[in-house]
Length: 327
Ligand SMILES: NC(=O)c1ccc[n+]([C@@H]2O[C@H](COP(=O)([O-])OP(=O)(O)OC[C@H]3O[C@@H](n4cnc5c(N)ncnc54)[C@H](O)[C@@H]3O)[C@@H](O)[C@H]2O)c1
Image (cartoon, rainbow, N blue to C red):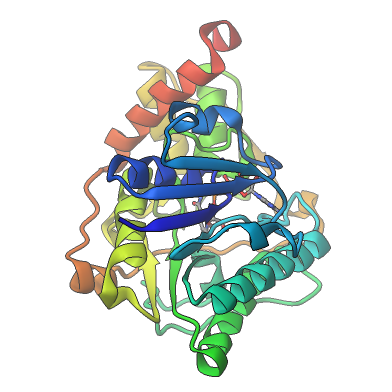
């Protein structure tokens, strides 16, 4: 059994990953400053003797010195500078990664790094393979700060591999959803659309809704991450972690699907919010993964169809919000 340290353990992916690792008997140290994570996400295993929770800030260079693990899964991150601060995204993502990489080099442990599909940016050749070009827009458009921080992170890790033999696996995650997701835009459009549909309120769509994405149910994301963490073949490789490219759906279609799953009758009222209201902004029109590499290496196959996964997520979200909130 391995000892695995997860940064961002009270967040969406971190808490689901910790639960899976503990189920399999691994020891887990989970660190989070609860800036975007929640105590409720770790409540089910908080008292598991194989789990240790540390409330702390990964940007603090001294924090990690008291903990030792075989593998560090680095998930803690700033994201979506559409709403948050680009400088904070650049600064904090770099500082945290530097601290984690230093720790891995000193302790000779492996890093598993959560990168993002956003690194492919404006590349119009779909689906994105791990070899695809990373094409960003103008530096004055702050939304690219997130992708840039992750591209920097990937390059920083690979440079440390060359210089100091750091062992790594990089997962480029494509939109994941499911229980423990953040209920604001931080958690992705599906979180916000579910709440709006439960409350029968207008659904806010950014742009014209024709931008398309794929959505990966959290258990599939965790299946893929588990291969990246534990399988020898993942050593020093980059993998797309996503669902089947055939699951591509526009944001407008997603709105209708979620509405239909919650309110059998009627159509959603939609409030289109122009991109210009975010200042200088640029969206990615289509984001579709090629998952051939991870499928070939580990026989990874996404198991959960979008409507199935959404039903499970809606039930969870209803429980978290409480009936009085939406009826
Ligand atoms: N969820 C997705 O669909 C998705 C897609 C692409 C990439 N990713 C990447 O996966 C990782 C996890 O994403 P998530 O959706 O679980 O995000 P999340 O925000 O739910 O979880 C991240 C956690 O990190 C914690 N954190 C942030 N800054 C910290 C700090 N300085 N010190 C300690 N803890 C800190 C937050 O409190 C939060 O609990 C991130 O790196 C993200 O960029 C996620």
